[in-house]
Image 1 (tube, rainbow, N blue to C red):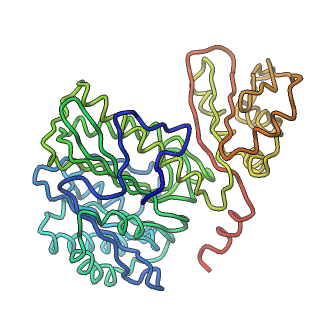
Image 2 (cartoon, helix red, strand yellow; image 1 turned 135 degrees about the horizontal axis):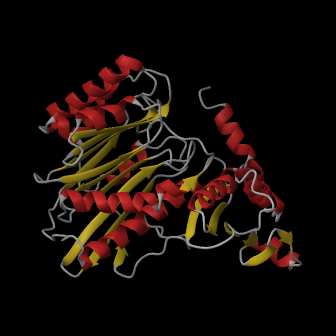
Length: 413
């Protein structure tokens, strides 16, 4: 991993954060192997282990009404505040698989427990891939033996590869974070490219730190940063059955993060930047995506602001215009009106990359050449101002391309 990680203007690297070429924080080992789910020798099974006996964790799951077996088992059978291992597979979501799917998830958990010596309640699960197909649990159990034998403190790259589905590249980062109390490490591996929608995105993300956290601090930091990252992205407006984010802290650095301290603030800033950049990488990798948009909506009514932002981000017309570099701001106006029905006459302003095109619901004269050039960028920002002030939200979204249709029309064939 030699390329720079922080590449988006919407996720700046804090000054006290340094990028590393790879590797996990102290107290962690990981691996990724091929167990035959995907075929062709592709890695499709990852194992992550925390050797710190006092590990603390926090978890966030999808809010879908249809939950995959690994989500149900992790949520209902695990001590989610003290996870010490994760088993994650790609190629099969183990979703909508009934009792057999639940039994397969539990069998995976028990097999990992036997290998690692970690209580099954401390082993979280993640699966991603095709929905409605039974998990090949025997292949996973066999593969876990090989994964356990290949655990390394620099195995994060193999682990990140093993959780990919339609992702063009693995998504991961390793950072050092300078705190007043000392230096800690922070790393993460994520996957996601399609079926992405806020609440939260269709993805898996596993985060590790060697900072010493209590349960409340871990939960606070993860909750705040997920709301500003994975809950703010959309590729296609489709909510997944499998979304899972797990933060694990080994405590092996010995640097204690006290609540409401400068250390907590600075670690939170680092985690926030890390997750926002990973979230933006997911949107940039949106199946067939060429460009990414950010819509910011302001106003006095928080519910209206949120509805308008998501309507713009998920509009096929806005997304198609973004893909083509078409400065058709009327698509944005239409999406706002469709989200805020029975509110006419609706007064709103629209600006795209700083070029204001609409004021109080009426078109303005503007530099059309400057706007046409601005929407050719890889990242395009839309600002919408409704009446009043006091509420603001943002959503990052990908464009809509021919390739997206191709990928999803051939997903199981």
